[in-house]
Structure formats: structure tokens, C-alpha cells
Length: 203
Image (cartoon, helix red, strand yellow):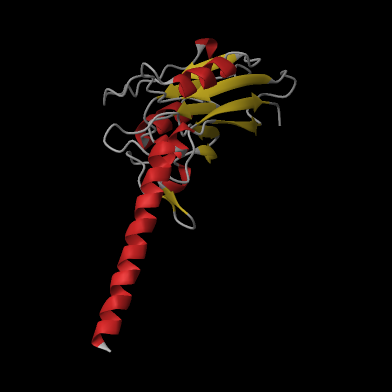
């Protein structure tokens, strides 16, 4: 009986180890190179303003010889985009004195771009009347579990907002899952690398 129980435990542990190895291999060899373009519609414009498109991508960590990522970026260059936003380097500094656009014109579209979506920075934009906030840095969590979502955000943003579109006070917030990975953990799981084409419309 004891030998049978030990054998069952050994078999179960072996199965778990094989499954874990398969997940890591999938995340390293397949998913982190499986790029996609998502499309979102954002009612961020004032009535009467014509729609415009914004291409949002971040953290693309382009390396020499990364042909798949280069080809994906070349395809994005063919999109009909009115405004393209790229992430800035993460330097762990932010300026909370966000300027209000000239004359405080309420009909003007205000887009705030910040690499890391720390709440203090998002709040500074939202208080100044910005309608759309774009951020990256989180890699969408990079590793997500079904029913749980992202395990980490690498900032103080709530985990459920780690990628995609959500409301931030009176503003819309879009966090890009990005194209890259952490140099310390070069894999993704249930979180494909992506760019997003946002179509801004009047509500």
C-alpha cells in the first residue's frame, strides 16, 4: 500500500513537472512571439468631432535579429493612423505638473501619455481634463491565469486594469500589453504581445 501511494505521488509530481515545463516552453518559444492587433472604440471626443485613430504600442524592446517583431511593426506602419504614441523609457521619474492645453479649450482633445501607469500620474492627467490616457510598462501582467488574471502589475495600478481599456475617473485609460517581456523573465502566458488601434468617436 505504501509503495503504491508513493508511486502515485511520484507520478503526480512528474505530471505536474512536465506540465510546468510545457507551460514555460510555450511562453518562451510561442506566445511571446505571437503578436496581434486589437481594436477598441473609445467615446472620448466632443459631439460633432470626426473620428480619429490612435495606434498604441509600448515596450517593444526591439533586438537585432528579431525578424518576427520587425515584420509586425512593418505591418503596423501600413495602418491609417492619425496619431501614434510610443512609450518613453522607464526612468522612475515623473512630473505631476501636467500642463492644461492652451486656453483650456474644452473642445480640444487632450491625450496624456505616461510610460508607467502609477495612480499619481494618472490622477494628475485626469484632474487637468485629459480625455484619454495612454500607458504601457505592465506588459499586461505578462503571466495571466484563467479566472485570476494578471499576477503582478509592476506598479500600483489595480491588477484588473493592467491591460486594455477602462475608465479612470472622467477619463479613458488604455494600458498596452506591449510587445516585449521582462529581461528577467523572457516569456508570456495567456497574455499575447499586442498593439492596439483605438478609434476615438463622439459619444
